[in-house]
Length: 496
Image (tube, rainbow, N blue to C red; front, side):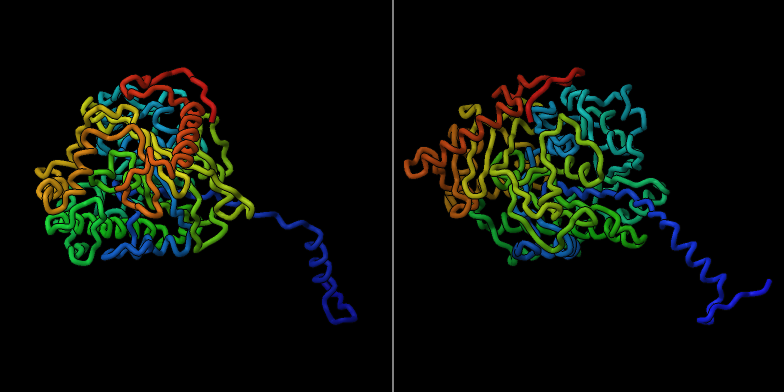
C-alpha cells in the first residue's frame, strides 16, 4: 500500500490514526478497594518514643506517626480486653452492644466448629445478635479477613474471619503470616486485625525469648501514683521492654506490606485496646486505663505527618473505616467518622467530650466496679456508680506468681516510704468517692480530687450534666452491671 505524505512530511495514515484515537475518551482505570490493617497491641498506654517517653525506642511506630496522623486524645471505650475489642468492631459502647466484661472465647487454633453456632465455647455475655460487626460487613463486601494472637470476641459467629493465627509476639512470624494471608487473599482486598500480645503480662515471658528489647530501669520515669523503688522500676522497665517488642512486631507487619508494594494502598491503624496493666490503669476508668495511642496511616489520610488534639474514641474506628471505604455505616453505630479530621474537610470539627466506662473485668462479682467518665480536654470527671462497693483487682494487676506482677507488692511494701501510692491503691480497692474531678493540665496522674471544691463547682456541674445526657442518649440505663441484658436477637433502638 502506498503511503501518502503530507506537506509537513508526516504520513497521512499516522495523522488519521492519532485523530481517531483522540476522539475516543480514555477509559478510567477502576480504582482498587483499599486494604485495611488494624494493629492492636494489648495493654499499652500512650507510651512511645514519638511521645518522648523516657528510656523507650519505638522506631517503627514512630515512622507510622511521622508519615501518618496521630491523635493525642484517643481513648478506649472501656479498659478491659474483650469489651474493648467488641466496641471497636461494633462502633458501640459496651453497655449498648451488650459485651460489658471479659468473656470466654475459643483460642485461634481451635477447630472451625468452635467459631460457629454449634460452638462449645460461648459466653452468655456478648454483643446482641442484631448488631452488624466490622468483619461481617467487610466479608460481605468481598474482603478477605484475618485475625491474629487471640479472639476474645463474643459470640464467635458474629466475627467471621476468613483466617486465624495464634502468632502473638514474634516479629518474624508476623511477617510470615501476613505475607501468607496476602497471597491467600489473591485479588480480593483484605482486612487484618493484627493483634499483638505485648505488652500484656507476664512481661518476663516475652523478654525471655526476646532479651534484646529489654530497657534499663535507670532510664525510665516512674509515674507519681506509683512508688519509685527498685522493685517497681524493674517491673516498669519490663513493661517498656514489651512495648519495644510490640514495636518490632508492628514493624514486621508493615514490612510485609512494603515487601509486596502494598503499604501505600493499605489503610494502617495503630492503637491499643486499653492502658497498661498497673493499678489505676487497666480495668479502671482512670485516665491511664483508657488513654491509648492512635495513628492513622495510608491513602485514607489526606494530611500526613500531623497530629490532632481532637477528643476521639476507639468506637470511632469502625465508622471511619467504612466511610473511607465508601461502605454504609450501620444505624446501630454510636461512634463518629474521623474522615473530616483526617484532612478530607478543612473545616471539620470534633466532639467537645469523650466518654468511657468500666463495668467489670471478669464475671466475678468481686471485680464489678461500674464507673463512667467524661473528659473535655482538660477536666476529667469520674462517677462511681456503686461507690461503697469493695473491688478486687484482676489477677494480672495483683498476682506475682504466673502473671509476674511486682508492682502491687512493691506498692504494699512501700507503704511507709511512699504513702501516697499506697493510699491510692487502698482507695482503689474500696472507699472511692461517688464523684472525682481532675485538672489534667496540673495533675496528669490524677492524685488531687477536685470534686466538691467550690472553685471547681462549675466544671463539675457541666461535666456531670454532659455525662447524664450521654447516658440517656446511649441507653446506659442501669448502674449495676449485673442488670445489663444478655445477648438479644431483636433490635432495641437507642439514639446515637
